[in-house]
Length: 316
Image (cartoon, rainbow, N blue to C red):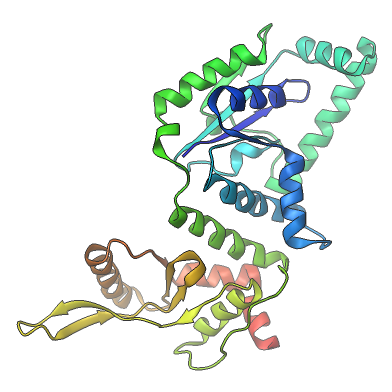
């Protein structure tokens, strides 16, 4: 899988670099406007808070990365998949004089007008990144490759990026797996619940038979994001006696068919959590094809506090 993020200060030709990388590598170029159109198609005219943009962008890019390798150029875009395997984050830098000169050519203005435009654009980009990502400035350690736009064409710089892609074998690893994309989408929807963004046609769900109040709260979140779910649909045998009778089994709390993902919630004390973790390790060993995500007590408390899930459940 290859997801290539290209960033740069205003006045750097980072969008041209992203386009040149896509042409050299066969990756699909995804522009900012295309990403915004994808998000608008999902959420219509709903007002999108600034801090909801990162999970929305991850969701949109993740969907595309299942079928193709992706290159995108977006301010702050290196923060979307930081630490994710198969991602290459590129930063294009240039001297102030180089960037002012580029603005002069692009906008056909004199040096002073270009300087004012560039300064205003820098203020706007920093403000937007701070609103959306919590901080304005990028951190150099978040980038895999830093290039200097000093009298070099985008095509020349793209050849350097292509070499980095080849050295890591990103194109040979295939596209994003369905299981990985499912987890990207699931976690994105959890994060989006905080902002009350409602996709159309919310899915109904059964509202009884839960073994613990936390399970009902979690089900309300899945309802809210029209994620189809099944409650304790299957038990996995873990140990058998000499006659083949099941001695021990494990039943995950939820199954999400759209993601082929089981979810286990636990609010137990640590001694009991250790026992449950042993069962989960056994399950993963015996059934390696089964995808399971575990939410521990602190994870669940964070969900309830951050996303106000208890209030949502009581409102039904």
